[in-house]
Amino acid sequence: MRRAAKIRWRDVHGILLLDKPQGLSSNQALQKARLLFRAAKGGHTGSLDPLATGLLPLCFGEATKIAGLLIGSSKAYETECMLGVNTDSADAAGKVIEMRPVPEISEQMIESALAPLRGTIQQVPPIYSALKRDGERLYQRARRGEDIEIDAREVEVHRFELLERQGDRLRLHVECGSGTYVRSLVRDLGEALGCGAHVTALRRLWVEPFRAPRMHTLAELEEAAAAGGEALDSLLLPIEAGLIGYPETILDETDSARLRQGQAVQVSASPGICLARSSTGRLLAVAETGSDGLLRVLRGFNLD
Image 1 (cartoon, rainbow, N blue to C red):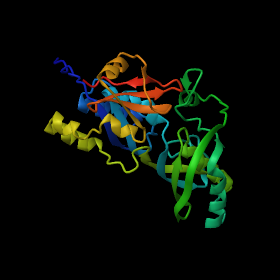
Image 2 (cartoon, rainbow, N blue to C red; image 1 turned 180 degrees about the vertical axis):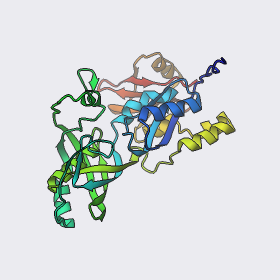
Image 3 (spheres, helix red, strand yellow; image 1 turned 90 degrees about the horizontal axis):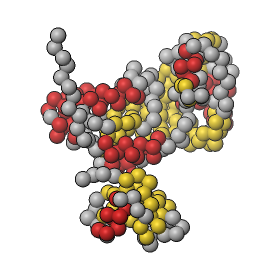
Image 4 (cartoon, one colour; image 1 turned 90 degrees about the vertical axis):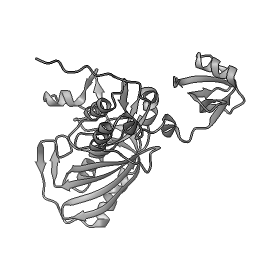
């Protein structure tokens, strides 16, 4: 029996804006893309439900060091939901647990139900979620039939608006902070309307700072991979693309060398997080200037 050829992993550094297809978990999508790039190191910037499609920023190589910054970013979605049906997962992937008649509902009634779900709110995450309790994912415990009480969490909902209504189906736009579950928003909207609801489709439109993303499908990646590594690598964004908005501090050759060795250096910059660059423009680190005027590395980059 012939052995499969050993993959020759390579150093790849950058950010890929993947258009995740429906049916794949975020990690499955990451591994497919990573295999096409043969990237030695890769990570994603926060889970997107298997049911969902849309923007999933993937970080390869040194870009994985900023994944944590992107996980905490604001996000936007377009979702479709069906009124009158509740499922155990609050989306179409779950089991129907309740069906209720949908009353006569005007657009003004929908707006009145949406309003309390905007701003800083308390939200109970769905039991089928990747959140952990005692080191185990909630969805794993839910699949075993455990009855779990989930505490509400504070989340930020910047926009939650009705785009279209067709009978018992609503199309909604959501802009929210990190940790917000669209499935929970839809579930709570359904309860406010007195009939229940669940998500039937979900698409992530953008993740800060990628407000107008040029996304790439797995099919595009496969086509580029067939053309060679150069064509594939041209689809990557530089690490700096995920760090827009941070001020920059330029260091001379001596201080650049010291910072790369993990030493703090004295600067005249204002306190706060910044991007440290060498005088030649090379990105050295995400760093923070303290009130003492010392610049310290938060995330250092090895981009030789």
